[in-house]
Image (cartoon, rainbow, N blue to C red; front, side):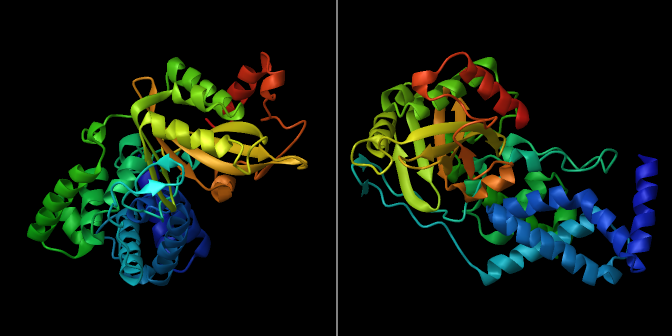
Length: 375
C-alpha cells in the first residue's frame, strides 16, 4: 500500500510538471471508477463515456490547480461531478410522468415515467474499478447501486440531490467530504440527502427498498436463463410466460412502453413472434452476457433470405426467488461494448446454438461457453 501511494505521488508530481505519460498513467488508475460515477449521474453509457473524457481533459488543463490537499482520486471525482452537473444544466431532463391505463398495441400496458436516456452498462467494464493496491475506499461496484432499478430511480432526483446521494450513500464519503466536493454547506448537504432518500423510496420497486448485497448466480438461476434462451429461440410465448413472476414488468428504453403482469408479457411476446409480425418465421440465436450486475441475453435474428443472424435486442433480466421479475429491453447498438458482434454468421460461430429442431446436448455446452466468455 505504501509503495502504491509513493508511486502515485511520483506520478502526480511528474504530471504537474507537464509529463503527459505520467498523467495518462494516473488516468488509467481511475478511469473505470470515474466512468461508473458519470454513469450513475447520467444513466447513459454513451454519455458517461463522453463525460469521463471531459473529466480527464479538464483535469489535464487544470492540473496546476491541484494543491495536494486531497488525493488525486478525490480531485478527479470533484471534476467529474462538476462536469456532469454542468452537462445536466445544459441538457435539463426529467422523467415524464406516467399515464396510467394507456393501451399499447394489441397488448395491455401503460406508459411509465419515461427515462429515454437509460442505457445498460457492461459488467466487463466494472471490474476492476481500481488497480490492485489502490486506495482502500476504491470499492468494488455492487449490484445494489448499479442495477437498472436503482439507476432509473435516481434519475428522478434533481442533479445536485443525485450527486449528494451518490457521494454519501454510494461512495460512502462523509458529509464534510461531500460538502467540499460540491462547494456546499454541511446543512445543505444534509437537507439534500434527506430529500433524496425520501424521493428514492417512492421510485424504487418495493423489493428494492432494502439494498441487497450482490450474490453469485445460482445453478437454479443458470437453469432459468437456459430456459429463457430456449423459449426465445423457439418463439414460444407460453414457455416464456412460465418463467415469469405474476407481477413481472417489461420496459423498453427509449420507447415509452411498460408491460405489467405475466399475461400481458405473454400477449406481447405472442404478438411479437406471431403471424402479423415482420419477425414471424425468423430464426433466433441467443448469447448470454451481463449488464449492471444482472444477467442479460443478446438476441440475434435471421430473416428468410438473410445470410447471418443480426443483433435485434438486448434483454436485461432481474431474477427474484427463481422467477424473472423484470425485463428491460434495449436496442442492440451498444453490443460492441459488451464484446459482442452485431452479426453472427450462420455457421461456424463459437456462440451459435442449434436451431430448436436440431437441438441436442450441444445447446447446453454452447450456453456454458458463452457464460465462460463473459465472466
